[in-house]
Length: 197
Image (cartoon, rainbow, N blue to C red):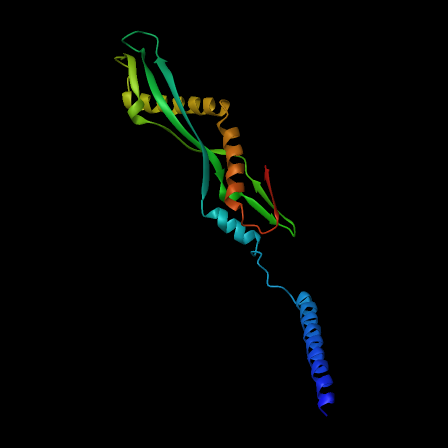
């Protein structure tokens, strides 16, 4: 009987070992076929739009313009002829309105279409205005009205200069770059494509 016991003990140990290995292998195979917990973030048009909406307006470029505006009206000196020269500085901000951004989410990519850049704010700095060569007219003078007209015309001229200098082009490029930075790491494994209208 002792001889039989000596042979059974190693055989049982071997059988237990083999059974454990088989169970581990079966567990591994089953584990591979079970649905894995997704570590990827949920990405939808709504989540991306909400992320972008946090910034409201994306002002990406500033521009200052200092100019000289001359106003002369009337023909007879001191009677109907009036005028002045106005030196001023106008400040501009350009960028995009985020509410106009379009977002499309697909399986492998996210496409963000940006609207064209616009002038978001334009104003003459009141403290920068200086008047020179003022000519008053006895029958043709309304200083307040003339200054208001001059400021309006000067701002229009300054804005044209800002656009010619490339403020909108620079704002568009900067907006594209900032949107890429803002959405970096927010899209899981999807590719980000930023287009411009």
